[in-house]
Image (cartoon, rainbow, N blue to C red; front, side, top):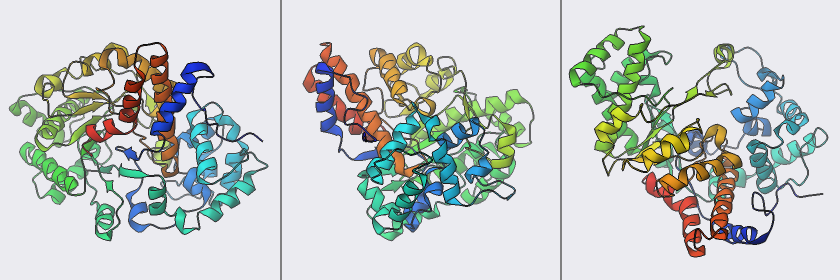
Length: 469
């Protein structure tokens, strides 16, 4: 039986590019993992409880898995996804796993298949492909291992060789899990990141109540523009107490604005009163990106902008199951025009770092690389979300390197909720980058010693530097 993973995965088939890729990969394979942006649950590290059954660990919370199965006719209830109204769903982990195994063939050729095969082989020691026939055996093995002490979250954190991991919490979060981690004396480094979407986006559910809550937590009058901005400053400072080095902004577009203080205050007052004018709501989001950039200039938090996703595209799924169920869809994105107000304000700041992500690959060479290749404040985030794949990573390097170089990028981040897949995702990124560097050496565009230095930078150093970790 062939192994689930191959030592030469994602490398050239033969010749010097293959041997070079092997050598480069060997030099970075075992480097510590720096995970500067993601969505794992801090309570895992705080409580250090055993993970639940295999289905609850690997299927139910993973929107990559859910969306593929849903697209082929499986119902989310059958996969154990909780409903917002508490309606019954499948709770038998073995039954959920069986359905997943029967449909595992659907993931052929996808990055999800690469990640899961890596998890099965390297974390759980499974040597046979997942099929309907092997479902019970694989379920039993994973369930057995999850009962062991060395499969609890903190032990896996150390086994994965994670140097630091950032979770992402909303502006209204009390960070109690991070406090518990800090007070526990455990040496694992888990930091938070400031995600203010719920209190900067007028279209976010419960926006007005969220602003009231923000004021209560921060001790500021969020009925006024000045008090509202002060509340953000207070919360950002609080997040920094729990290790935050970055903020994260998931706006529909990259549109920014740079209004005068008087105009911004007038706009806020209209939004606070519940304006239903879409142009005003859009302008407020745009202004708040610039306000967040100015705060980052002042307090040192690295700013991440993640635009271009039509969130919760299916209202039916959103109303029944809530956010993050596989129905966030990429849209076209503009950066050159959209970011100009922000860049006019802070783009030349050498001590500010704004990391740009995109779901619109057509913007790589046309907009993003030229912008990052000129403005000191800008860096390019890695191929993200739908493009967090071997092909997506290759396209990213091919389309951005010639204009932005390597050092206007920030290495790799896994952006995942699926804790067991973190080593797999970093392994794929390291392999793709090593293969790309090997090609440049084979084409006499890069010296071999430079490639080794770059391999380490892309796998480890750039992320630490960019995110100030």
